[in-house]
Image 1 (tube, rainbow, N blue to C red):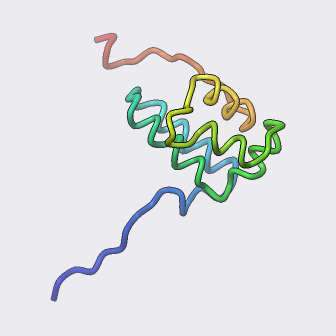
Image 2 (tube, rainbow, N blue to C red):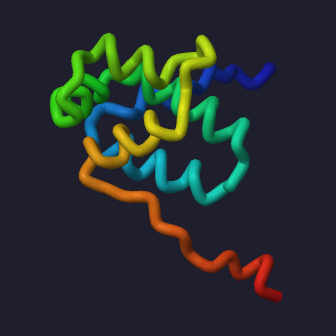
Length: 99
């Protein structure tokens, strides 16, 4: 009997600002620009984005557009998002590069 699986989509688990902040932290640790851009697109579609948009002083549509896949993602979008989440970008030493 074959193993049955279901599709996994991270946006199903981004229910609030805390979930989004933890996801963003993990994604930023990768340092992979493509992965980070993809994650911003997922955050833009997440159900937890509405209160984050309000905290950023933007409508949900404005913040979602800023993070969307249509090429409008910019560094300032990342700053707006992290500020609205009550977090910040923080450079930390990369142990793998320090060796």
